[in-house]
Image 1: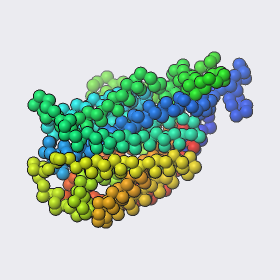
Image 2: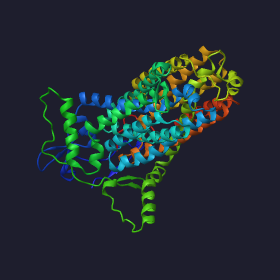
Image 3: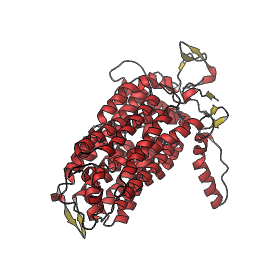
Image 4: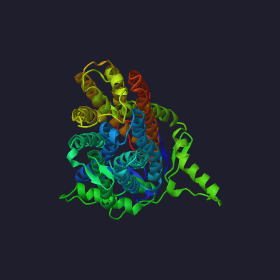
Length: 546
């Protein structure tokens, strides 16, 4: 049995899971050498490095990136259709807050459930299922004639989104060598910007085109409903690619004792990365030792789910209670010494940035709409609140709203580039703190702006800077926790973020027409507090995955 001792950042292990029999191996030239048969043994990190870096990782980035972009499209879809759909569904500002909150409620439920299943059953299978749920129910929402049904379908779609977001980063990171992991995960995170731009571009192209509307039975299928259908295509296509082409994570397979499958994945990686090369695959005659992979951290013992023995209760009620305890047990481990401090800090950061980012971002199109006649978003409160949903004018569609959304989405580019360039030299901890502090300042000035151009400029600054913290969280999140907890941890903390996003949207929906300054200043304060909290995170620069 191989024991792992975790040091700062959960990164430096005394021994890693080995390919072959570790008991008969010694270290020679930095490798594990088996004295019995004269063959070299590789740890997981060494095995990933031996497969090389090339075509496989490029294809993996595109496939996982498209899945990440599809989640962005599905989430932001609602914010772009609000200025027009509010007329057809007769929505008040409170209704719109409830609608934007519904998808985050679904993501909160789905994030932890799917994350837990990914740690138990595998990353790839969960990605296929969650992306399918996301796309199917997202498309069905386009046919909902009433607000409550549209709300329900968007909630179920959110359950799917909640599963794919945390799992995609766990899956992707487990194919990366530690020397490139920061850059590669940062590159994956940039696809969120691509999805944001795609959603804004589709909205700009489709929603104002009222000629695309048609009668579907008793339902008038407006252009915004077509936009909803188009937004579901990326997630459905991603599910198809993962189901037909992509392999399971080799790290998960190794820890689950599925030796032959892990070797096959490493062989596929090697083959694609060394196309046209004469270098032989080094492990043809080797098998993985089937072993339990415990993790001991100052008294905390986490055992791979594939090798735990369970006593199953003999009544339905007891089985239900047992299942709930099993499902919630990873949360308890996250807050057990020495993981407690980092988990508490991440809790604060995820809550702060999610409340601030989604609370504000989902309402940007509505805020831009309120500046159409000039003045800041808060200066037109009386005009906006005096309009009832029944007689609110949504047609002809104001295309400037979508143009501004497109520009704000594109403003993510500088932040994404900066993250890629600095992640492996500065580290995620510094980038998170810097990003949140500057984001808080930029939001404060959104409240003070007096013109439409100033409002757009500050929104772009917020977009460019805040994306750095999201990208850095994607990197540091996978490095702070071991394989047996990685997806569960990401699912839990993204679930915390969804609660914050729900609260943010409800607060904006309730106060935007009466006390506009309150939610904006609250966002600024939360972002600033999150930036200060990030200073306390452990350093995880180029750490090994455990």
